[in-house]
Length: 122
Picture (tube, rainbow, N blue to C red):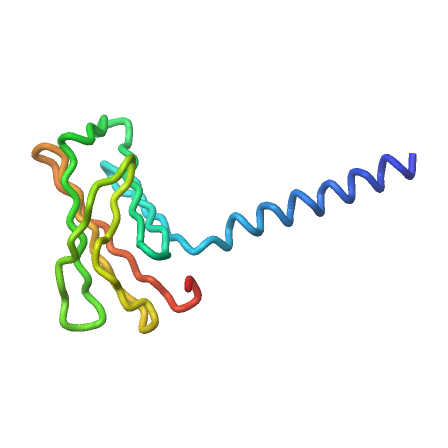
């Protein structure tokens, strides 16, 4: 009986450690009315876009614009579409923290999500 309790306790600890590692990855997520967007911090910065049920996301209709708001002055960043995600093709100085607006356009519907990249994500 004690052996079973010890096994349960150890497995709880191991699974809790795994979940903690997943939460500490350097990415941020936002959900809008049309899409969910996940930005993965790294070199290069990757942006994953997933359509909500209402949007029925078609990659051929999807346009993505990334605008850096902070640090000043603001700038529209160029992106390239890869297999299932977008890559910001310009280097971004993340040491100072960055505010980004990610605008998705699907046919005639547009949605903008605001992201604050904090120091702790680096």
